[in-house]
Image 1 (cartoon, rainbow, N blue to C red):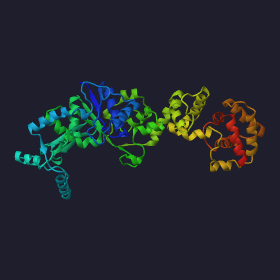
Image 2: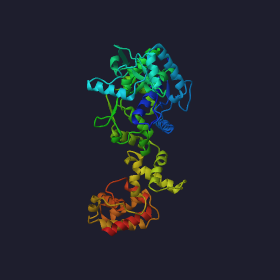
Image 3: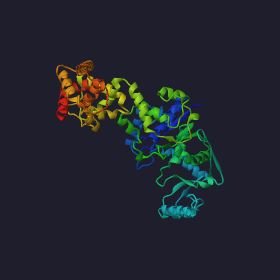
Image 4: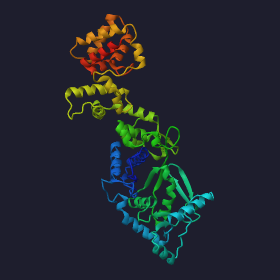
Length: 485
């Protein structure tokens, strides 16, 4: 048997972290088992679904390095891969259910259903459909149709049945059919609901394993009843845990960025996001925490997926991403960092000169170890670019009051004036000479010079800062600092 899994998002917005994790787990399971990974679109929410959202979801998957073997944009033998293009197929199965009596037309109005719901709530019972239209006579149906009522199709849930789900993550889960009530499978506009369409899709695409979020567990008994009514083979199910924030609540937009594109825009590297996501719910063997995608494909298994909730820890994501930044090539980091510098109004022309490219390379190399994500480069650029001195920190103002500072900065300025260009070696030589001539320690020299050039007490390597500022900008900033003393 060929393992086949799928990721089937509803294209009503961007790909969120939870959806990305489901896609990743399916992808890794397929690769580990030499299987097939399908991506299709559950676009039956006609008001909210859009091709733009679908495109954005697919682009986010590609950015993460999650590629599919069958489905939207790549094709396959089981298409079409959008639910709105499969309505004829669903209709055939609906006719079969209606013919055998396991489904029926329901003419109840929204008002009637709401009254029934409130009545059950008042009694302390679970809201469910009580079967008013279960056994309608032909004459009653005709009257409803003459009144202009458009029916939905409901599935007839068998009474007194235990529905057992042997879940690959959660173990055996049992539901009672009496608590479900007859549920809608086709809306009055002819569009199938999720619980129905997904069964037909998984069957016709020969899906063998359904790996999805825990929030779908309550849908599973309905889907199993449909499989059984149609005489279809059921796939194996695996429901992965919820993702919680650090306070133990389900993640929401109030917790900050929840969409993959948010992290892409901030300059997180895709391999870091993948590495972080997989660790939310999957426990690798051993102590290793940093994995390539190939290592994940070789090691992933459902028996190491936890049924306990996962926690989204931004500090861990930043730690993982900073590791990947340090490992990345300088050429790649320059390419990825340039747009953030352009957002700050720098290097906006299409073609960089060799000198500009060297400057950016030095800048990126200088700050790379300080970055959790690349958008943070914007916070460093004005300390090392241009003649304007950033505003001094309070601690910096106190250090500039030290008695050695005026003579130190004047001598440092004279040394810079005597140089045509500033390199790291030249900067080292100048500071060494200043220390010797004034008989000052490294601490007495480095901190005041850093403050005079950047306004900051701490920061990246001082020799590189001097190099990045260049002769003219360094002199102008020194003049402004000296004038404040």
